Length: 113
Length: 208
Image (cartoon, rainbow over all chains, first blue to last red; front, side):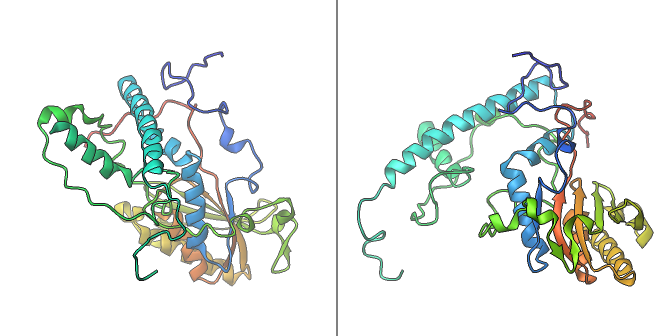
């Protein structure tokens, strides 16, 4: 893998798809990052758009590129991200094990639904 | 003791786990104790504080994160397809609708409306609506700008538009809301914020 020089020092891109300059402007404009508004409900449409952008990590890119992060910050952010991912994976597995169920009634003994 | 405390902390964090595969709603909530005051050394080792960067609020991003609930029903119907470009909205095909360009920066909100031939129909900004200096960077200024743009559009007989938003700022959501308040039908919202992932090196962190 050819490591392209970037302003984030020697860190490689943390994405599966390699980014390039102007990627945000490379695709047809009203085909991507677009949400149709139903019944003029702008807030709902914006909520969906923001949620999708957040899930795709775009808001993170915007937040991270507002200010230059010094290399020590980049390194620490990267290691924090990695350790959080490991913790989350482990904890998800643990919780799945703890809350596993094999009964017809989800909440036995509960009077109200 | 320290290990116990750590476990409690991690359980506390659990509810904030993003994209967790476990549906947290049907589970019974369990109680965790408050985090005890740690020594300075423990706190120091907790994690890195990215000074200034994470403190910056991102206005106009309601719906991001798990704190707010978003209606994700019929999501496929709310995303555009190839047929959408030819679909008629109030008698006008989608790709011939006028476009409202909103540039929502940290300090200002600019609204430009263009038709499909790229001719400017109207332009307005927070400053043109009478907001000066720091008042430009308020959500109210953004809403007023949107309402003003919408009223001008209605005066010209344009009642159906599509919107393209650029940037994250106080006017991002409120200006579009203002358009609808003025009686303009917004067909779609597009985000066109530049991603400077590989771009020029950004400015240095502010020291306040």
